[in-house]
Image (cartoon, rainbow, N blue to C red; front, side):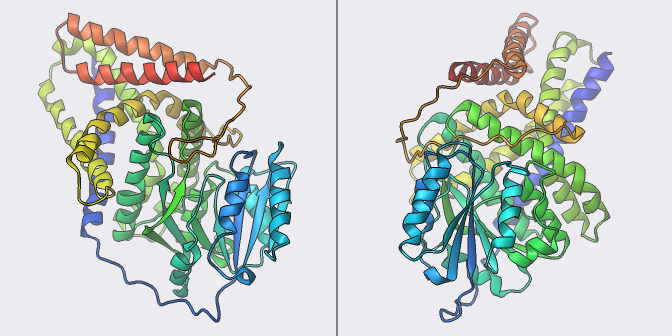
Length: 482
């Protein structure tokens, strides 16, 4: 039994290390990347017609803000139309209809397409709007995004290359200073929107359209088979199908798209669940196609790592549980446990990717206080994601097993900086089995922490401390938010 437990621990440790080394490889590509050539300027006398789609579901606090922002886009009003794809069951529909009527009176082409069945969720809404769209290009913005007026001018030029199917821009954060949880999410997302996206681009690997703040060539959507609702991350699904058809995704790190981060733990959980489960669903559906495709081995390897990246939470949780099981028997292992110290290489790799991604986004000249804050935030970020590992593992397992669930929206509250709209949250969230298990895991790892001190085995002390604090924090905050 001891051999099985130790083997389990080493196996999942190796999985995490391989993933971390692939992240380091993306960092190397990112550092070595050259400056891309800007596209030729757009012909102002022959600008393409653009359809802007705004998929919404029950967004009363941000719907008006979104529409006002989109209609302020600096682009000739006769060269773009707006589709508000509204599946709402609350006051959002009336808000959208009223605002759309206001702008139609000013000569804008805007319509509200309201569905009552919400079939296919966001993918279904996008698919329903596409046959009615007039544009050669389709820009998509979720409810929490506020693109700058020059967004279309900064992106459309890249489509002068006929092989470009998608242009994706970098998310920035309207409210990263609102709370500690918002700041940690911003730091993690910064890694994806710098090292991961640009590293994959520089390495000529598959990229991802992130579901919003990007533009599709309509023909690329159709050629790839259109929007499908068989996963919770329809954006990743269509991205891969389009690239396997030969379409290129251009990622623009220097074009920013500000958005609102979720500020409640239950909102963070719903977003994480959708992303993790959708990633696993896409891994199950797309990985055979990637393996069979005529792509370089390095591209296949990074594509599989990308598709299976949500599974890292399964590896982390299994590693954590195995470490508890090993604790009483560590002295009985017949191998030199110092070899496990190589796991520090993986931790250093994660730290390097995190630090480089975030430090380059700081304003210049660098202030020592800001750099020190980045260093101090890193263990806090790891602790929070350790605390989410059970919740995300459930999502991943459901995704691999093909268990279907609804598309749960992430609440938005019109937050900019530290200010938020007054909201009415009267609905009480029921106690879930998942929440109770998170509380139980916090007790398990706290007990393991004490046991390590009692048996004078300090090898897992920091790890178990972070797990106990992570699960404890997720449990307590989730419980209070009910």
